[in-house]
Amino acid sequence: MGVRYFPFGVAALMLLFLNCFEDNKGQSKEPQAESSRPSEEKNKQIVANYDSLLQVILPIENKIMINPSAEEPRIRLIEAAYDKNSGLFYCVGKGVENPKQPLAAQHQGMRRAAKKNGERWALYLKAWQKGKKISIENTITGKLQTSGTLLYEKIEGDTLFQLIALPSDSVQLL
Image (cartoon, rainbow, N blue to C red; front, side):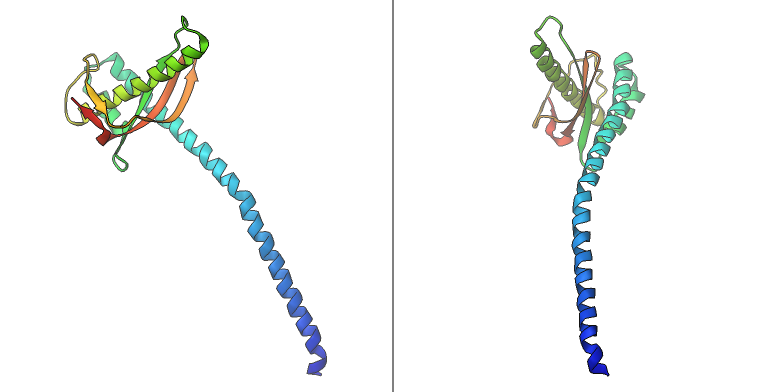
């Protein structure tokens, strides 16, 4: 009797094996199709985080511009704009369109001005981090070993805001 059921048992095992193989085949394709979705979501999250960081740093920079001698906003800016883990300064630079220039030149000039402004903030951050009481009303001199990395930018009206990152050890005061 066991011999009569043997071919059916083998056939059943083969069907089970093929079914499992097909299930695994289907499963391996599904995560690949979905893998682009988490990547897109992650990119959206990164952009949202950069915008959030810009929204934290920019008002503090504005407070310093309004009251250059105030110590408290400088301390808050160092806390918000310096990442101790990565050693990076995060700075927001602003550039404004010059309506007297052609449109293409306006955008290039606005970008250049925003980047330079952000790099200037990095110099002040370095000075304040070292305990120097320099005001933004005073000229600061220094050099950057590396150029700032543009992380995020947005335009509001005629103003371009750029969030840049600079390694703090690349910021040298003179």
